Each structure stands twice: as structure tokens, then as C-alpha cells.
Amino acid sequence: MRLSITASLNPGERLGMNIYNEQGTILLSEGLTLTQKMINRLVALNIPFVYIQDSRTDDIMPKPPISGELRREALQTIEATFLEIKNGVKVNSAFTIEKAALKFTHLVRSIMEELKNSNELLTLLADVYTYDDYIFTHSFNVTLYTLALGMELRLEKNS
Image 1 (tube, rainbow, N blue to C red):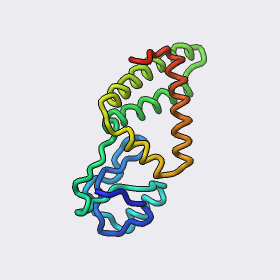
Image 2: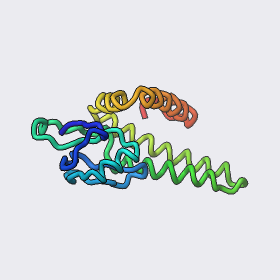
Image 3: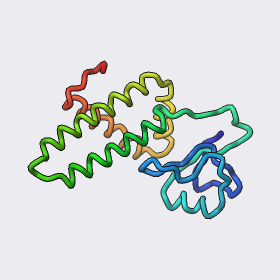
């Protein structure tokens, strides 16, 4: 399997990995033969690169640092929590924030547990850096914000 820039895809190539939207829903499935219409849609959705099946690189199988299931759970939890805070009644805002803190604490612990057991962190970092320097810098800033949230939630370093 090889990483390919979306704009340089050709009809007839087969996807090497599923493509997900921001909500974690599969847009296109692994093994699907691409058409020009699909390629145009991926470009329009600003999906910068995809994995393509390639017999020359069959032995290369990128592994995400966390499971797809946990990634979807995290995205859904974050979205639902922010919507709840946004639409929450002002009187209950402290309760809503406390409930959100509990959800995020559980989520962060789950992610950290999977990351501790993963050897793919450099792959994730390389994927981000390969994509775009802005995204790399943005990801670094998000990491800083996340660490600050962890300190605010009083998460232990080793938890």
C-alpha cells in the first residue's frame, strides 16, 4: 500500500484504507475502485491524501496509533459535549461542565492507554508533517492545549 496525493489519483486505482469523514463515518471503503467522480469529490472535500493498493508495496501496512472505534468515540463524545455546553441552560452550566470533565477524563485515559501500547506514534507525526506544515504546527498547538486541559482536570502524569 502506498500513500498518494488525492489530486494525483487515477480512475481504476483501489483504496488501501477506508476514508472517514469528521464524524467517523466511512465515506469510501477499503478495496473500492475509484472513479473520476469519486476522485473529484475527495479533492472537493479537501482530503489531501489516501492510501492506495499497490502490488509493489503490499508488505507496507500503516497502523493507526489508536483504533478506529476509539477515534469515532472520541469525535462523537467531543462533538456531543460541545453541543450540550453550547445549548445548555445557563443555570446548569456548572453541572454540564462537570459532566463534560468526567467524559473527557475517561476519553483521555482510554486514548492514553492505547497510545502506551502503540509503536505507531512516529507514523502519525510523519503523516501530519507530510500533509502540511500548518497542520503540523496546529497539531502541536492542540497538544499544548490538551496538556493544559489535562493539568486543569488534575490528571496525573502516569494515569
